[in-house]
Image (tube, rainbow, N blue to C red):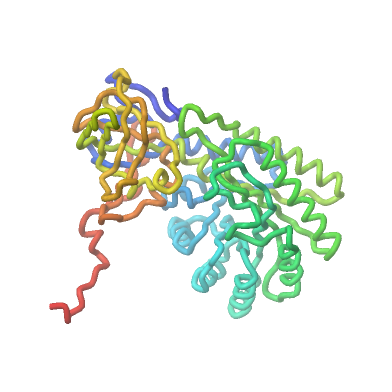
Length: 438
């Protein structure tokens, strides 16, 4: 029935997550409400870490790609599970720092890092700055020199691989805003230039081919291409690349039709390619880094909504409006991302209708799920949209001046607030009325 193992049906015929009754969570915290299952997050972290240790003999690190969901509590969890993190902004880096995350396990990505962000990364001694472009490289070298430091860097490489996913989440092809390309020689040129700089140390190369990928072949091909590039770098420049970051992008089950490969199988399969090419090319096995994000937290999260208006347009469509929408989950509006949902307060009610779950924003495109088989609903019912632990809170907004919902962490029947919900005072907190306006 459920797309996530985090969910169950309890004796009251209510949805249960992390041992907590969804209806009771709504009574305590209100709606909309993000709910995250701590147990499943930890389980997913361990799957990745154990697989990395097993297939690379401990010669690697798993990073949680925290753009999926960034909050101080999640950094505490992944740190306790032995993972590093990947951050893509000064805000994510600062959040991790304030959470006490060890900076020597932080990798800083991003295609347009500001001067202030580079300064913050160098000041905090992050483990690795992943360089995106020549301008950024020059800035890192200059700033590191001014601070009397030497920055350890890697380069984001576009390996030219079609990841068979949505155009908006493909990042490995040459026509992408991210990184430097192999096809036109710019990747090799920037590494050669970096080797002449005094304040940076070239340590690794990185690639990320896209997101929500269900096939093994693109990951295997990416590993092959990147290792061949590492061999080329050594042969042409003498530079030994010590670290290979293969990114993330592993698919998850959003709807019943999705059939993702077990994450352990991804790592095992790619490790065989990595070891084989290293042996063939006679290069030392590099330190391997992977960056799962969505696959650690997405299936561990749900969002709970309360039904308001039900609008049946005869022979057209039935709209069920909830008290959230694109402000707390913009992914359908952005790229028609599919989701599954259940009636959380009457799980076993027969599915006798086709409905469209709509949000409350003043946009016709504010849809959460279009044309889903669902029980008959009335105002006050509770709908749970599943697999919302990634890219929901992190992409939320105050569009229409709607406050962001709270985030609750559940585990073994207990719930704890980890992100406060906003109120109207939060909405106007930064507004200023100039005196001359009266």
